[in-house]
Amino acid sequence: MDQLKAKIRNIPDFPKPGILFYDITTLLRDGEGFGQAIDALASPFKGQAIEAVVGMESRGFIFGAAVADRLGTGFIPVRKPGKLPSKTVKASYDLEYGTDSLEMHCDAVDRGTRVLVVDDLLATGGTAKATLSLLRGCGAEVVGVSFLIELVALGGRARLAGEHVSAILQY
Image (tube, rainbow, N blue to C red; front, side):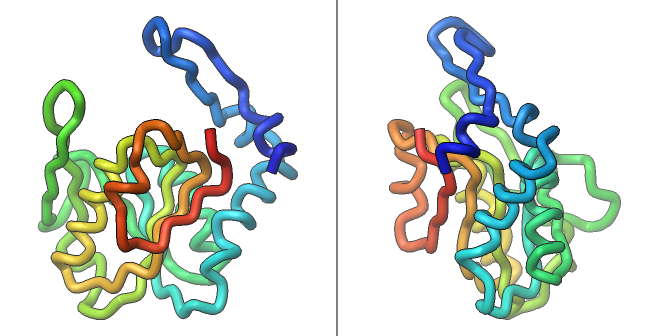
């Protein structure tokens, strides 16, 4: 996976001093690297009868839709409040400076639908945990959670204890 890490640009002091930002836009523009990343995200879940892939706004849309295509299934977007046109369910989660929320259409999954959650980054795990809450509240069966990058020191994997978590790159 070192070849994928080499395609991700590191930007120090963004968005604020002391933060090292992993810019995935350089990976996205590289056709071969992007394809390798999608294959790596999908691979642990092939043959597991995934019925839908779920991605969170916004970079989860990029990776989730591509993984859904690789797995031959549909894609379900989880969005910030007020972005979806039909009836939604909502989950809130804590941030270090407040709270945020995510929404999903009520009819996005049927009871028992086998889903895979895909996002670009596992940091503290709040976004993923809120998404899992939405899905399980609607009766979905979460098969796993797949991330391109895991920031190990932030402890997100611990917040997702009991889940099948896959992270391609760890920093």
